Length: 113
Ligand code: HEC
Image (cartoon, rainbow, N blue to C red):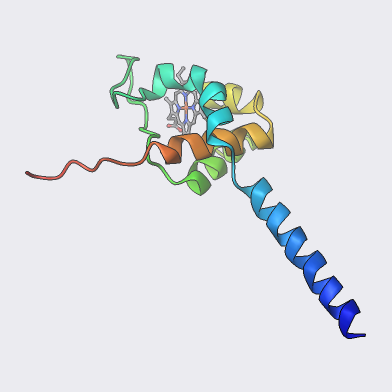
C-alpha cells in the first residue's frame, strides 16, 4: 500500500515537472521565431525601426504578459491588424518560446547615475 502511494506521488511529481517544462518557453527557439518581430519591436537597441508609429518594447517584458497579449491578438480580443496577422501565424509553443526569449533579454531600467 505504501509503495503504491509513493508510486502515485512520483507519477504526480513527474507530471508536474513535464507540465512546467511545457509552460516555460525555449528562449533559444524563441530567438529564431522572433526574428520578424524584432524589425518592429526594435530589439536589441530598444529603438523603433518603424518611424511611423510607436511600437511597444518587448525586451524584458514578462513572458506571461507577452503570451497573453499574443493569444488575445490571435483570438481577436485585442484588435490590431498587424499583430493579429503576426500572432495568427504562431503556434502556442512558438508564442511561449518567443515570450521566454523577450523576457530573457531582461530589463535594463534607465536609472539615474
Ligand atoms: C509590422 C510591425 C510589427 C511586427 C512585425 C510585429 N509587431 Fe508586435 N506590435 C506592433 C505594434 C504597432 C503593436 C501595438 C499594437 C496595439 O496598439 O495593440 C504591437 C504590439 C505587440 C504586443 C503587445 C505589447 C504590449 O505592450 O501590450 C506584443 C506582445 C507583440 N506585439 C509581439 C509581437 C511578436 C511576438 C511579433 C513577432 C511574431 C511581433 N509583435 C511582430 C508591431 C509589430
